Image 1 (cartoon, rainbow over the protein chains, first blue to last red):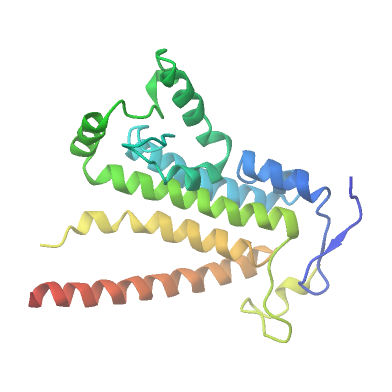
Image 2: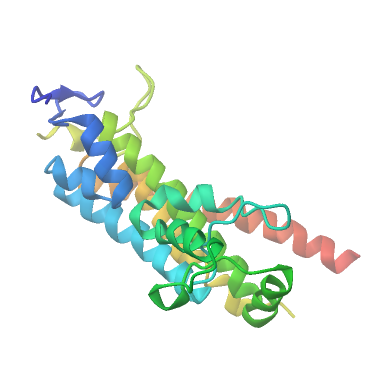
Length: 176
Length: 61
C-alpha cells in the first residue's frame, strides 16, 4: 500500500491518496466511496449525492427499465457501457440479463430486465414516452460523471496548465 | 407551444455536472462552488443560445 502523501498539482495542498488503485476501484463500485476511503469526506459525499441522485432519479423516471444489458442482433444497448460507469447500482442489469437468457424468471421485481423482443421495447417507449429517453440520459450522465470521479480518486484533482491562473477565488486552495 | 415543463429536467443535470466537474478541479469547498457556478452559467448560456437559435429556426420553417 502506498501510504506516502501524494502531491497534487494544486500548490501547497497535499492529499494523501492512500492506495490510488484501490480508491479507484471503490470509486467505481460506489460513487464517492473511493474518496471516503481516502478520507476526503466532503468530496466523497458530494460525488455520492450528485451522481447517485441523478442515477436513481433517471432509473425511477424510466420505471427501472432504462438500465438493461442487451447485446444481440435486434437490440444493441450501447448506452449500458456508459451507465455501468456508476458501478454496483448498474450491475444487477448483467445478472438479470444472464438469468433471463437461461429462461429463468427475473429477480428484484423485474427491474433492469432486458426486453424480450422489439415489440416489448416498443411498448416501453410507447408507455413511458419521453421519460424513457430522459431516464436513459440521466443514467448515462451519472455513469460518465463517475468516470471523472474515479480519475479524481486515482490521481487527485486536475489543475490548470502551469502558469495559467486558477479560476477559483484567489488563495482559497492554498489555505491548507 | 413550448413544452415548458420539460425544461425542468435540465436543472438537476446542470447542477450535478457542474458540481462534479468543479470537484474534479479543486479540493476545497469554496473553489469547487466557484468553479461549479461558472460551469453552470456557461452551460446554461450555451444551451440557451442553441435553444434560441433552434426556436427561431422553428418559427421560420
